[in-house]
Image 1 (cartoon, rainbow, N blue to C red):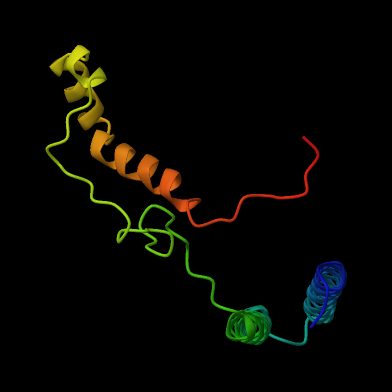
Image 2: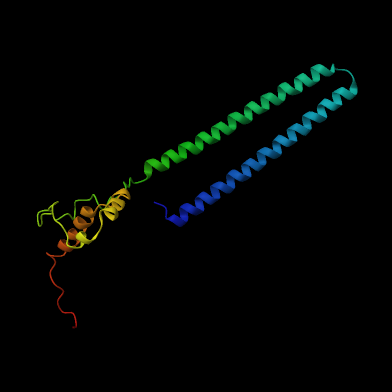
Length: 165
């Protein structure tokens, strides 16, 4: 496996290589166009050939070159896609972690959370505030459940010994 720095360096070199290749292709294309235009001008200057035939032939050659460039570009994009597909196959799947749904630290056998439990503080909170909390997706029951899980999580841990007091 490559380190992140080596991977970044390799990708940078690949981008530079592709940019140079594109630049070279553009220069070749420009040279071909100027060569074709000079050829047309020479044939027309001689006066031997029909102008329509010369222009039609040059357009056909230009269309052929455009097809070749399109095919080369398509092949390059397919190669890039296959590289991306290969990278995705090598990647280790990492599904998202949902901490509030994870039951690994649930400790549900150690407590019972009753839905009818009423907190003394809740009596002082108006129904309007509770409704606003529910609208925002906040449920007091979930907060209590989470608080109790955190409180119960450390009950089986041994106390730290040997620490200076």
